[in-house]
Amino acid sequence: MNNCVSHIAYNSSNIIFDQCQNRYSVWHQQDKEFTKENLRIIANDCFDLSKERLFIDSELDILIGKSVFDDLTDKLINLIVEFDPISFGFSVSLEPSLHYIARLQQDLTLFFETYIDFEEGLESYVQVFEDKEPVLSIRDSIPNALFYAREKLSKKIESRTIHL
Picture 1 (cartoon, rainbow, N blue to C red):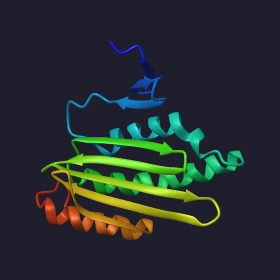
Picture 2 (cartoon, rainbow, N blue to C red; picture 1 turned 45 degrees about the horizontal axis):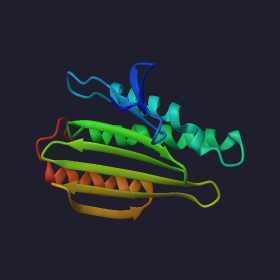
Picture 3 (cartoon, rainbow, N blue to C red; picture 1 turned 180 degrees about the vertical axis):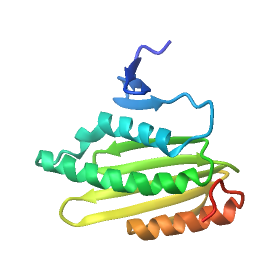
């Protein structure tokens, strides 16, 4: 048994807190397909636990970060749910940046990171891996990064849940 790890019930999720790593993880029991609703619950619970990392100079930083998070989360969830996700995670880093990761069918992984610069704006970095090998790696605006991610995933997974 790891003495660093404790379990916390939080909203609709079970949180695993690793004191040694100072890291939270969300565990959401997945018996059925992921839906937009339960992906949003996971992302919101993770955001609530790590939003203080967006604090730079004022509480306004967190409000701006929350606004970016809400908009980007909706767009990414709409993309991810098309491809029958196997797992999904979210975190806020100290830069600050928003990190999303989704494992998909056919051993594909989507990593989407958006840096929030409160003076310069936003920049996103997206990677798609197939069998742990990168098949897409770009740094661009959010709309372009989402476009290229969807394009690459569409070519790799033809049998999607939702066809556009």
